[in-house]
Image (cartoon, rainbow over all chains, first blue to last red; front, top):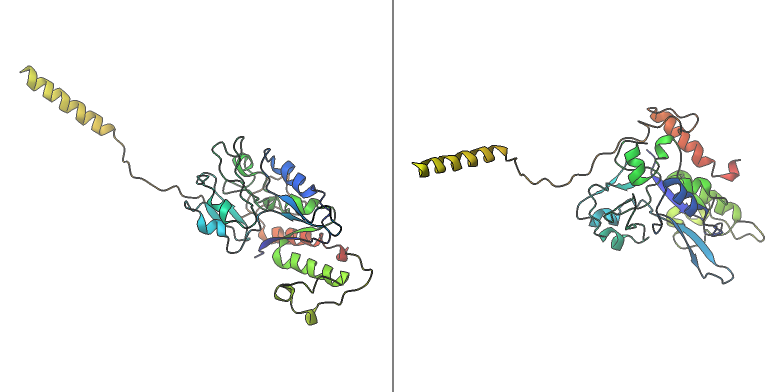
Length: 208
Length: 74
């Protein structure tokens, strides 16, 4: 079974916020809630880098570990979801999450009592797939329609990749090998194998 | 006499109200279980080539969609 993951390629992200807009529009996310956002390092400085960040659907999710009412669950596809009917809006998950994924709306259909809202990998929630109740609380369930998250599918430069972790990792690896740079970064060997197994020497003038 | 009637009346009220009481056992809120993504789908929005209830076709559809992100295969 696939384990769903996101990867964002900082060499390709152009900070267009298309992913953020796609997410907002797809799920009718209220003002003040950002399930996904673009973070830029060294903004305005030549060589700035941007990445799109949302819930990373961690395999050992800290939000899940600290939740006092145990409202989180992980689907067979590795998507971390939660039950808003059980959530008490305490905010522990927000403190635990290293990515700032949990959001706490103060009004609107997504939580009159400030229940937590976050990226669902476009997989909805525990309500029946595609039901009105699910759409009201969690947004659209694209996964049950045989589609990938709207943010990744809408990304114009394909910086944001979403889908089966093995597949997106393979796409990213192929990309880095073609561009001839990137495999020297810390952690590459752990994630994609040693450079001898597929790493490449930096090539002059290659495009990302 | 009237005191005995009053006491009996009170007892009857207590018994009658006692019958209305519901069991008050505290149950923790339990999260609902989620269904499989391929089990149900709104046919109008389903991706072409995918039919609700077909796990194999659902997986194939997602694989195909994931590979569409790989421009080196186009």
